[in-house]
Length: 216
Length: 251
Image (cartoon, rainbow over all chains, first blue to last red; front, side, top):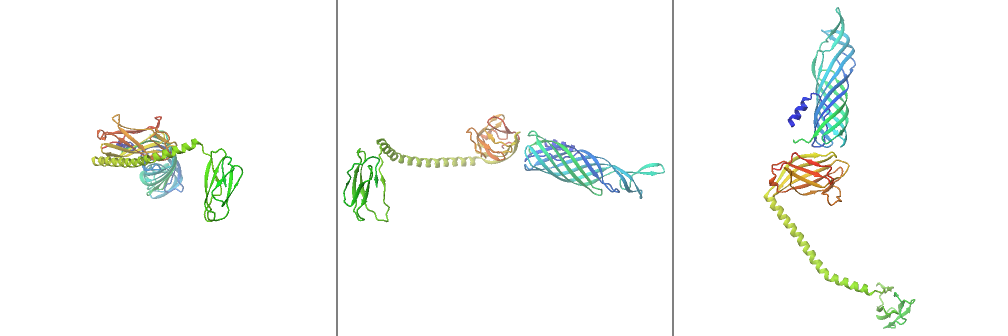
């Protein structure tokens, strides 16, 4: 049973604010998310704001009625970021022009949730973890003898980079039955890129969680 | 001053001329010593009806001693006097019996305590093991039962449970069952209430926001060892059922 639950949790490649649980309870939760992201890019002056959508799933354990600890896996797809003017190098030659790029993220976070109620539970959540950021090739629009051409700037080809992630989330949870809870929350996260520009996410989400007393 | 509840006869007899006696109304007399060294004397008085006749000893006391300045004589009915006599007689006869009963009660308490201690010691010698358990259950009213410890003690077993009441109303525990293969094997149940249980039928009451510890006996625990047990706790109306059906196995 436990193995199945863990497998189901791992299968959800999208992370969420962890489910929340009273003392001795375990919870598994899924949370669709939507919001906005600020994406910085090398060679640009200002970050671009794009929409984001994703899903998250988590597993948590109530160590106290007011505190549970857990982990979550969250993934988000961001809209294409466009920058009106970028100054980049293409084949070691400086070029300027509009730039665009797609980003997806997956983050694995350790989560501590402060719980402040019984039936209706305001929550405050802090998370820290690591993430992977998959980015498409950046495309710089420029002119050549063949007309308008898309260039891939040096060092901005498609690839996956690592982030250090911190997040904070506040929400309200309601226990429908002894075994099911629902909730809403809003939160923000900061992804500090390792060799890449930072990424900020602000999201709202709805959470559905299954709660039970595990035998471990 | 001597006062009576009815009229006095006019004559009053005193054994000494050293005391001056004067009527004070028709139901009292005033008595005064002629001088400070008057010897003790007797004064005889009677009421007109003859119901009250008293002899009073008069004595002059030094200034340092307290003296009665006003004495009132009250008529007592025959029934009252008889009742007082009966009461005194009963108390005289019952007092030794009560003393004997008290001594017997004390010795009985000591005997019961000694027998209980011997029984506990015998059980402890036969079997005395603590079993860790991990069973929890909650109902929709946010009342939670935790069963984290069992005890094998002699021929019986015990489940130690806690009722954590996170609801806004008191949890009134009326029954506890321990089911083994559908058969109730529970014996005595005790709960350390956190609120006053006014109904005699209740085992105990857990106030809102508190946790109370309880114990339920598992009779003849040898017959249910290594079998899954179910602990069911219920309120008088059957609502608020708490059913811990996983994680209770005594081994």
